[in-house]
Length: 516
Ligand SMILES: *[C@@H]1O[C@H](CO)[C@@H](O)[C@H](O)[C@H]1NC(C)=O
Ligand SMILES: *[C@@H]1O[C@H](CO)[C@@H](O)[C@H](O)[C@H]1NC(C)=O
Ligand SMILES: *[C@@H]1O[C@H](CO)[C@@H](O)[C@H](O)[C@H]1NC(C)=O
Ligand SMILES: *[C@@H]1O[C@H](CO)[C@@H](O)[C@H](O)[C@H]1NC(C)=O
Ligand SMILES: *[C@@H]1O[C@H](CO)[C@@H](O)[C@H](O)[C@H]1NC(C)=O
Ligand SMILES: *[C@@H]1O[C@H](CO)[C@@H](O)[C@H](O)[C@H]1NC(C)=O
Ligand SMILES: *[C@@H]1O[C@H](CO)[C@@H](O)[C@H](O)[C@H]1NC(C)=O
Ligand SMILES: *[C@@H]1O[C@H](CO)[C@@H](O)[C@H](O)[C@H]1NC(C)=O
Ligand SMILES: [Fe+2]
Image 1 (cartoon, helix red, strand yellow):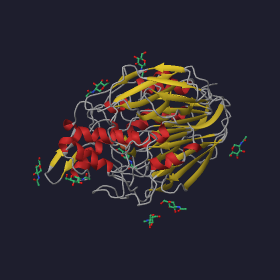
Image 2 (cartoon, helix red, strand yellow):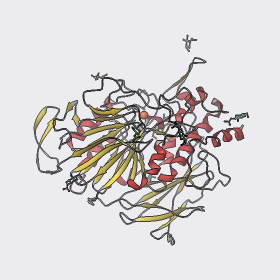
Image 3 (cartoon, helix red, strand yellow):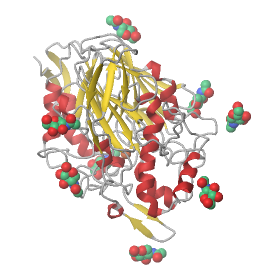
Image 4 (cartoon, helix red, strand yellow):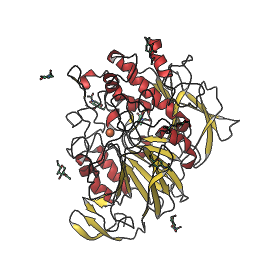
């Protein structure tokens, strides 16, 4: 059984990615259980970087050797190795600290037999030189365990036989961007159940659930390693990290509906997500991988949890009794922790240093999609939108709906008359078109009045180009051929004078900036 199962994975040649870990087939188990796999990096404060990787055996004291000279990795740092029930691997995390800003370092994790990998530390806040960022939301495992050219009863848009998928596109384009943002729905391991029911996974059954779930995760991290070993990969929580039942899954053949009660310990309550990643929650006064912020050059970036912890008595969509019924969280020490933190974080931004403020959260509220509580997060809107407006957030990124839609700058459903020319409202972009087993979602027709450009027929990722303190460009890049299908530039004066003409819930008026 075990051999046949693995043979099934190895035969997924069509879309198999060559891992940077030479010869390792994504999702397979190496002979050497200490072999370092799934390298991934995350910013850890202005002078820190966390190096994470997985091994099939526990490391007593995971270590990373590093330095600015690839031939002399003179420094060493140690960390910890964590696992959870049903996981086949150990997550090793080592935080490197006291690094110089905007500097290239080389590194090797314990038991590496390869030549050193490298990363570049964050640009200092206040460094106004241009750079780009890649953004994905809703990116699943590619190939035999996820999105492919043949998709059971799954995707409306299978990959074309020669199409470059989004993971491959990110790998190809990695010299163009400093980092990748991924605001939730990572790997889609909870699709194991639907993939089983639809007969997509040869030689496995529902009894193999735990192994299949973990193999989907392992495949994802293996597939991404050629880029995540070199570029920080900053993630946020999505509903598919919460539990193992994919929001409830029905097997029509037997008239059985599965819910979270089918999930094993380790597959619930964001456990895989908590174990796999080390986002800078501590470094930014936020909460672990759930809400945090960091600076990079002229940008202050905030990641929120739209899944839990909306505060003010609002029910997070993944919380017990929430619309997704995923029994996840809450993660704050008290109910309003996330919103209180967001306000404090926004208040403390030095807009002279980081004029751009970009917020990402998994779920949208402005999108041309079914107006139901598991698609559109009105609780998120109530929790966050007033603060975005009060503190002049520039750009809000989301996904969850598997399509691309660029929204006008908008506040409380009122489209900003200035458009992209110095609006006083935040600009919203939903891009959940990275790709997963079920393909793309059709957007509603006609589109909402605030929709400016959209496509629900191409896989793609977003490229954010920060030119200077007043101009940034958003591009939607088609993964299959690298073409830019949509490009728009936002101009913000960012003059930071005291008196502003702005719009509150009470209508237009003059207000004082909070920093005056
Ligand atoms: C599934 O198992 C059968 C019988 O062992 C084998 O012939 C077939 O090649 C396997 N399929 C895959 C995709 O591994
Ligand atoms: C895919 O590429 C191969 C080799 O270049 C070519 O023969 C084939 O026609 C292509 N298929 C499609 C559907 O474009
Ligand atoms: C399916 O199951 C439900 C309850 O489990 C039952 O009410 C319904 O009649 C069943 N439908 C069929 C077609 O068997
Ligand atoms: C964050 O800080 C707390 C308290 O110092 C510590 O217990 C926890 O392990 C830290 N979390 C991470 C992810 O480093
Ligand atoms: C999920 O985790 C949170 C934070 O540790 C905890 O407060 C909550 O009770 C957990 N939920 C369940 C259903 O175990
Ligand atoms: C969506 O639903 C909410 C509440 O269920 C309602 O207040 C709102 O008007 C609806 N929006 C649209 C565009 O139908
Ligand atoms: C900022 O970048 C934009 C777009 O490249 C350019 O048009 C503008 O002139 C630049 N502004 C300054 C002050 O350099
Ligand atoms: C690239 O792919 C997109 C999405 O399928 C398509 O619309 C576009 O025409 C292609 N561009 C080129 C140059 O082939
Ligand atoms: Fe989602």
